[in-house]
Image 1: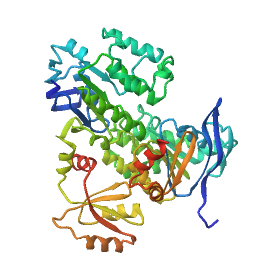
Image 2: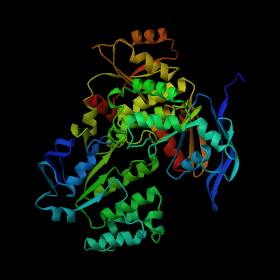
Image 3: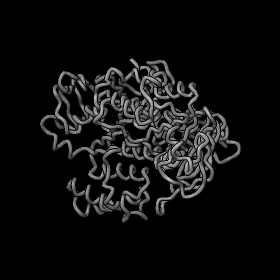
Image 4: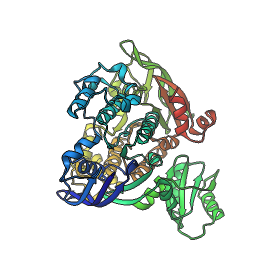
Length: 300
Length: 243
């Protein structure tokens, strides 16, 4: 009774936002939709929250059909859109009270569910939502999305533009919500967050590239991957881009991630090539691929 | 003059809003041709500091020069000598690629001939031949960001300020973007960049981390990782910003 999506397509005029998408989110799962801007993540969220109708395909949320049972879906899901969409001129408490009331409940009735999150903004409960900092807005929006105790929670890029500390705290909150039995579909452009989901769908240009557990997705990376570092990053990238045996070369933190076209690659040969190119301090070692490596390989 | 010149010099710079010190006596230097990462949590004071450096907000106290110009008295000269790009403000969506280049070239006072020459170079380098007459609104985000960066370099500024230039951009384009940054730095342009991607912090020559209005750490990524005994800049950031 999580989410079922079957062959969903949606176009805006000539632009295909979603092209024959299928996925299933199990009840109680923390499921990540991972992809950059323009991948179609928001369109899928709007279809699943019954704010938009797909051109083709079927979908159910918490067992309800997105077309026939849209009213039941609206009662059973919480949705936190990417853009802050609470009432800026209501206070923190008024916003929360408003959302509780339209869903026929009270703050007191479901306080337990939001307590963890809401206590952090409760000292500011008389402040207007428009005057809150980014992090506090995010916590209020999450509280409002949860106040009617939804079965399924939709979070559209909740951490975009958020610093690494707040992002970490946000994911800790999600893990605790999952333990309370809520099914969560969350989208993010940050590949490092993907590792925290039970399963992920990698999406780009309206198409699903792959669906699996983060661990399995990383395991599908097709080639041995190497960390290479040298004295000058720019020359290293330029040199490797012109190397005849290079299959892929991407800057990755303090290293360059490199794959070779050949079956068996010769580390010494690359080293001497780089020395010829005038580079010094060259280190080459085998490394484990990340989700981002896999995404780039699939999106190539 | 043979030693590396400082393009930004900041001494005890502060900005107060009422009693609140958004920027609290920060000090740092940025050298010519350096890629300088300016990091911090949301609300740490990065944007306020940056606004003072680009000449659109007057400091409450302290000293700073950017490209040799004073942030109190020579803000117009600063604006002429820097490039600026952010995710929020970059290009005009309802102008074409060509029109945007012409517009920004004109703003920076380049001659028509120079604008034409720059436009050809830029279109060639970014491979935008097919879309020069398309509206910027129709381009994918990644292309827009690469174009915006190149446009911010049109007038060959000594230094370019990049405010979260890669937010939401796909991983391949994000890396292509950084290759453009490396190239610009290689050609002598100083890069001042903010980001929430900690792998990008590793691409910087030096990184500062702001916490509650102060610069709490400033060094090369390698030395910061040694100092905080971690393997990644992400962990350095978490250790510092958590207090």
